[in-house]
Length: 329
Image 1 (spheres, rainbow, N blue to C red):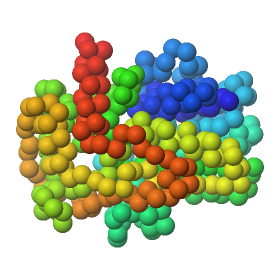
Image 2: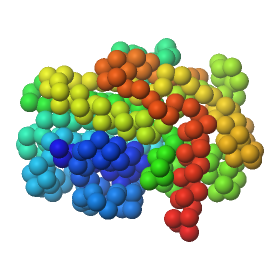
Image 3: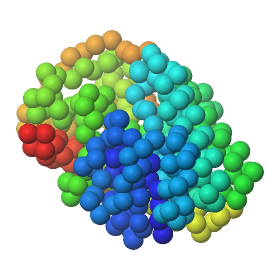
C-alpha cells in the first residue's frame, strides 16, 4: 500500500517513514525542504520537492503513485513564532491543509492521519487531559491545528473518507538505530536544547519559572519518544483501513510527566556532565502541568510504548546529536 507522507523530511515525518517501511508499507514523500532535510529521507523512498498547497502537483502525485492514505506532518510548529506571525501559521497549517484535503477528496484518497497537538487544549482545567476536554487554544499554532481538526470532521461527514487526528504532547528522542532525529537548527524543545548544551553547542539551558504548583516548582510535561509516536501513526493507519466508518481524535503521550529539573537531571546522569541552568521568569501561558490521559489510544489501537523511560529518551537524543555534529562536520 502506498502512503503519501507530507513533511517527510522533517523530524516526526522522517520517523514515520521508517515505521511505515518497517511495517511493510511504501511511503512516498512530499516536502518543500524549508525546514526539512533531503538526507532525512532514505534513498529507497520516492521523494518530491514541492508544496502541499500546489494542487496540480499533489493531484498528479496522488494519481501517479496510486496513493491510498495520507500522513500529514507538513506545517509550522514554533509557538512563539505563531504569536509573532499568525498569518504564516494560518497559511502553512490551515489553508495549505485545506488544499491538501481538496486534492485528496478529488483523487479518491480515503484515509488521512493528521499531526495535531495538545496545544489545541490551551491551558486545561485538569491534568491528565482527556480527549473530551474543552479545546481552547491560546496561540495561533494551536488554533491553526484545531481548525484543521474541524475541517477533517466536515470532510469525513461529506465524503467517503475517514481520519485520525493524533494530539501530540512533548515529542523527544531519536530513532534508536540512529537513522533519524531532531535536526532543526534553533529548536526550542527542552530535551533537544539540553543535549545541545551538554555537547557545548549552547552555553546553558533557561528554566522558565520556578514557582509552578509542582513538586520542585518547575513545569511538568509529558514527553513521548518519537519512535513510539511513529508507531502510533502506523496503528492509526491500520485502524482507519479496517474501520472505514470510524474517525479518531486521540492523545499521544505516556500519561505521566517530568519536570524541567528532572529532565536536566537526566541529561546530567546520561552525560556525566552538569548542564548550566539559568533560572528565569515564567513565560505567558505556560501551565503548571500538561499530561495526557492516553487510555483512549491504548484501548483503541492496542498501542504499547516501547521507549517509555526518560533516560532512554535522553540517550537516544544525545546519540543523534553527536551523529548530527559529525554529519554537519
